[in-house]
Length: 480
Image 1: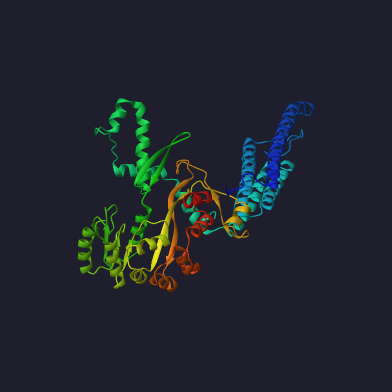
Image 2: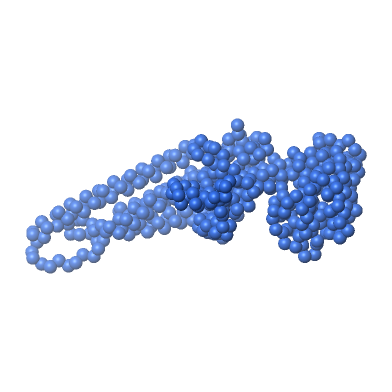
């Protein structure tokens, strides 16, 4: 089994974390010693006053040494020092982990963060607590240098304190508001088989009230994700909700929206219209029935549309009619159920003449849906060198890898939303000649296409893993 992350931090990082804990303990000990020193100074002050003549002493400014040798310690300075040390130690640990995740020198940057903080603490205890600002300035400057170096080595979407990063942070805030607004927009009414509302059951049995809220929120989330089906699956600890959607037809809809519908007439033949598309003519027809398809198709062709889109092309007569229309100068998009792009070509060749296929087809696109890492909780991960070697990735440029964590936005799953891995087969001249000659096989088509005209699902999957969109485990789950 391939392992994409290294769970244990390097020895150097563990040592520096130990130094950070040691520094925190040293700070506490120094604070206790300083407090005891103040107590001794306060006890000695009355005795010193009795031994001196009765003169009014001049007032001492806060923070200056007293005549008894003590030092005035303000509670405000003490709290500021504690907060500053905590921020310094947390920032140091974060820089150590983040530097490992993005491939920077974690040992060097962790040492710089520790050194800047210890330098500031030294001035605090030698002189005055006001020098805590020197600690903050030193650590802040070092952290700014790290962020600058980090942003030079990561893609735009993963840079810190950039415009895109600010927008990503802003999207975390209105999550609950989005779900509530979607719930209000849908006006969700849950009923049983007898038509009785769930809210009525909740009124009679208050213990069902929380379940009603969870179910309505679940449906609202599914609507935001444009899911068609919501599945509840039994897990080790309760249930897991999974959203399912027709990714193929959604991508076809997306392609249609990229067409200039104001200059091009688009006609869609589908089993059932599920999404509204502006300025698109839609026909609900049983594509599996040759007679029903031909009647509608011939009427559409007489109107000379710019593009014809067919859902679930099946059968020889339907495929032959559509390909003849394309070979005659028309444009069309059609979906076919097949294991891959080459298999889709062979499936069409089984019912349509090879010469017509070679003249009509220009490109075949295959896809597999994979879960996307949740942008709100994913964390950088360091891939193992052996995994990079097996995937054929350059060890010097492994990309930015992430691992799933889980948060409220993704319902503790670590994944939120889905995207597609694409395989594209372009009909270049070698492929057309091979198909036109008859007897084409899957291996022959792949060899004729070569690397220039065939991009595989695995290649696209590795690219999306390196870009931090999904994980190797998810890619292997889908492609196995």
